[in-house]
Image (cartoon, rainbow, N blue to C red; front, side, top):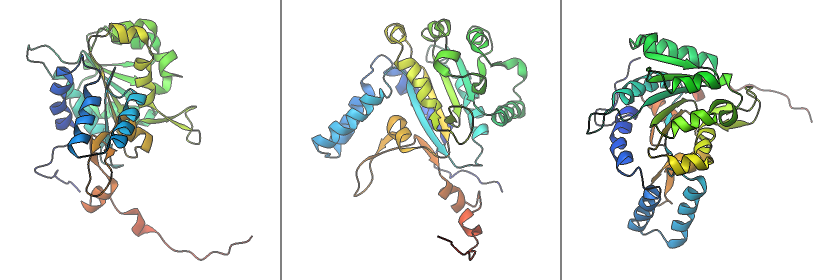
Length: 288
């Protein structure tokens, strides 16, 4: 069933594009977003203790200091791959007021093989021929992709054991420090060993930590890279680290995704079925 977006509501890609000018304007001010949070909290008469708590959270996670980040939450089955593809196209062609490309490269980071196949199909369906993008599957091809003409790079993270040690080498980091790159992450969670039962870690965390922990990058970069993560189930920690501060009536301010279309909204719009309606009660004997 095809559902049109709500007429007056902007979704992911448009909202991201609207945020870019603010990113560029304050690119050399690492404390801009921390100060902005303080101003918002004071405007809503939040007490000093709460202000200090929120600021310390952001500083501890170095949110938006060395690299910009946006977290988007979309219901399972909503078509995140298509949104990512459309966003990649918009960011690839985005130019600044001088007519230069804003982002030197747009990197699509995928974990599982089926997601890689979905991205490939999605790019083909959008008339993006294989000559327009390149795939990186190891340290060497990733570093080479940063210098080639193709401006969209599909990074198959499953082929790398770790982002910091196996993907972004010293050579790649030197290139990244001179570029403005956007990472689009399809599903921000991954497991340490690639199996579902292992403790899940955040690709978001891994990528941001690479930039936050590299002293040379911090000292030499003149442009800020952007990490955009898409997920259906953001954790509380992910929301605190990458979310946007929002104020609600009669409750404390909270960090929420930059943009969201939740499972509840998808059910209400009849875009997906309500799984709770499919529950069947079964009588069972319990032995203790």
